[in-house]
Amino acid sequence: MSAAKNINITLKIWRQKDSKAKGNLETYTLNNVSTASSFLEMLDQLNEQLVNERKEPIAFDHDCREGICGMCSLYINGRAHGPDTGITTCQLHMRMFNDGDTIYVEPWRSRAFPVIKDLVVDRSAFDRIQQAGGFVSVNTSGNTIDANAIPIPKDDADKAFEAAACIGCGACVATCKNGSAMLFVGAKVSQYALLPQGKVEATQRVLNMVRQMDEEGFGNCTNTGACEIECPKGISLENIARMNREYLKASLK
Amino acid sequence: MAKSAFLKSSIAKKYWMALTGLFLCLFLTGHLLGNLQLLIPDNALHFNQYALFMTTNPAVKILSYLTYISILFHAIDGILLTIQNKKARPVGYAKTDGSSSSMASRNMAVLGTIILVFIVTHMANFWAVMHFDKKMPLQSVTIENMGQKMELYVTTDTGKFFPKDSIQMMQNGLEIRNRTEFYNKQANLKMGEGYKDLYKITIAFFKDPKMGLIATILYVLAMFALSFHLLHGFQSAFQSLGINNKFTPAIKKFGTAFAIIVPLLFAIIPIYIHFLLK
Image 1 (cartoon, rainbow over the protein chains, first blue to last red):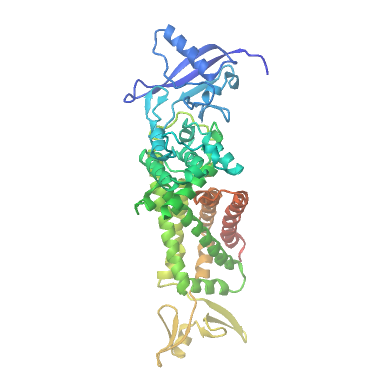
Image 2: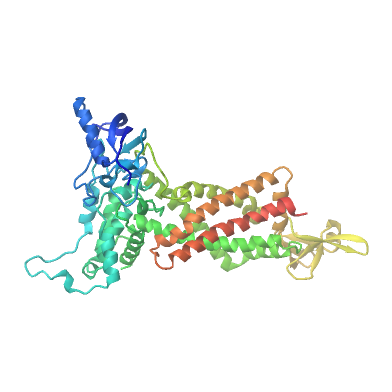
């Protein structure tokens, strides 16, 4: 890897005071950004500069900063989680950019993900979908059965695991031209539908989760496949097809 | 589950889009096979026979109503989905990349609208003329008999012809009723049935000195729209119906071939008529 160097960049960042305010893109120049720093560290650096200038720092979501919590977001230069594949924004590094670049940073855009402030959006719609059926009902009174006591075919276990890798960041919704949440819901439906423990409540689960998804105001999938490409965890479109099958099965019952 | 959910839920709308879309693919195949008969140099007989069959056969009638319903449902469902999808993102992005999906997949509504406009004009130009035009010509052939040219009406009975000349018709006591039926006036007896000459209408339409070239160009452009619509739509229908498995690569290949070959063959017909047919 080439040695880190410092670059100067221009940023166009969405600023919005609160959920009711009308936001706009603000332009900032930031000099001496190390290409070894992460994208979020670059934003930290910008915020430090803003604080020193006695200006309001930019609000953005982040937590673990190691690509697993699903908290960071950001639509960078027209792509969810920026110009790289299989990563979240916290795993994006400034070496992906060049000296003199102009970088657009916008929040996820979806009716179901309203902007709270600047780049922070409210993703609780995903929580409500999950609460509508994304679980298995287990008696936890002390005699819980070990999940591994039931043999599961390797292929099913692998597919369920791949679906369960979804971190619920919302990149699929952000990148979909229809603001559809079907990759997320497809993954959540699939991770249970593939396992014997999940089959018990499969019918109600898919009906309830899809109903909640529709109520939240997400768009409809038109199979463009953009979500699969932008998903940091590589969730496959197969999961949407599985959800469609599950929904059909459940509807005919 | 509530009955309405099977029409209204996001996934149910996808099923209907997929089912009507795939049915319309079948229709396209049938329609293409019919149209290709325009290229057979047989004095228009095959094509006009086909046109008669398509407008009178009861099984075809059922299929045609299914087709009309499918087109309407596909269009209405598509409009509803597009409105919902636009509403799902009230504030757009200042910068979008677009590299993660195909051009066709992002523009299905636009392509569909072009196709719908095409269908309406296409039906006005041919379907409505065939069904309702009182001045629709009947198919005739020119026969040379002992140095004399004669125009004869062709009938559904092979080898049975009636003279086209009105004086000769009168001499034979014939008249045309219900636009296609030859009657003996005195006996009030049906003597035979002629073919509506859709072939002639079609050739005249694309060979028209004023509008023929424009009609041909617009037809070809509509086929481009159809091609791109199918390029995404065909394989997309299977995904919507939950079919994404080991057959998917084959479905995608077949869909691509279908999306190129079918519109191409459709487009060749007006091009051939306008530029090559004598």
